[in-house]
Length: 249
Image 1 (cartoon, rainbow, N blue to C red):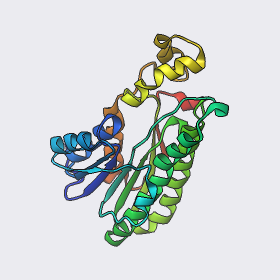
Image 2: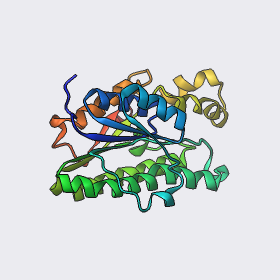
Image 3: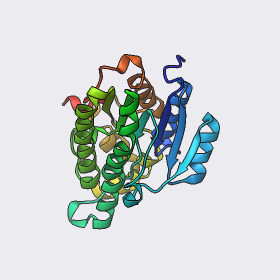
Image 4: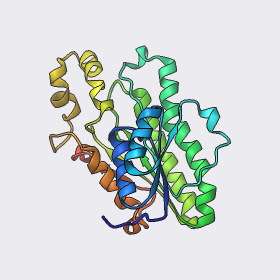
């Protein structure tokens, strides 16, 4: 693989598993020194050890702790996220707040912490792992959908402010990816839709997709790798779908 990120420093949140771990491996293979950030200290250390990076055990729901943070990174990948499936009238208010803290407030604070260094060097890449749910909605996911829609707006503002300083900002918008986050949804999806668990993938997760399979983490990571490379220098303010045609409707 071409060392398009040789000498660069990258930070990937939610990097201990799923999409985050795949992205950490991709960026390391491209030559970056990667910090793997995750609430799981052991998981972060395991991935960091595998790729020759470093681990950062952090609870991104504690957003106040990030207010005065300074980040010396060239590539920031905001990937950490959680999910809660519930009708609005039954949605736990604290769960709603926590999802927004992790998936919208924390990305803002990390971008805020990283931009001064990126501006000083005249180069930076911000990649926000959004979702097809950053572009369209589904029932029972009010917190997740609204947080991802907010992340889309944050990414666009970052692109507009960063362009003059050599900094790009994009969203990557997968459909359902084969990750533990998705697997954990199956029981909840079955409950709210009134169907059996073995019907959830075909009847809910892949219902809107033209390509009837889950996205693989490595496919998302490959796109992130391209976006952070030299051929992605003019790609900013955009949302890159990798959803099997879901959002084409």
